[in-house]
Image 1: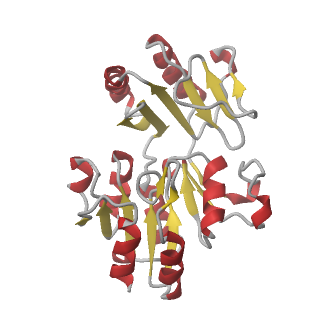
Image 2: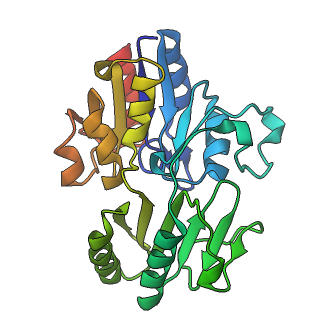
Length: 274
């Protein structure tokens, strides 16, 4: 293989209510034909990550949960895409876990701020207290008390609509950075804070391709648009930030795209690898 291209999903190659960027599938196919792997690296849970990976026809490992869990591509037929997309046991290649103590502390912090938490495990999603910005899936479970919190969480989300409150939660989480990693991102509907085990960022997928698949760093491209993408953009040999990425993301990128069009990433990839 000549290299690998890993793309963030939301805001980079996938857009709400519009789907994948125009020409993306054909662009990925073209890149694959010259020996370059294409994959996704997303903060989404495996439920939706698996569907999107299958839709793109990915042939190589991809990451969900901000790099906390790395999966083999799903082995589904096209008409199986409506099956609830929890990972199968043999799909998890790497897992990074949070302790019951850490999950409890984060949920307690959220509760003091009038918020709740959403906790992801391999197969289960637990809700605790007030949740905003999320639609409850039929399979979601609920904690009735913090005594029920389990060991081994893969990721947590704290969400809300008050941007100032999001900044306050992030400030409180900073004192816990010896135990966890987190990032805050604001959008028009509110804020989300992704909380991960210590050291887990999207750069984990860069490590995976270098260490497990022996692809040199200078042959790895990472493309993204948000603070959560900065670690992989900085670590990859070729870091690409979209036109609408914030300043801190553009500062660590080797390439900054100059147009915010939906097809900006496919156009750049075709030009670079063509």
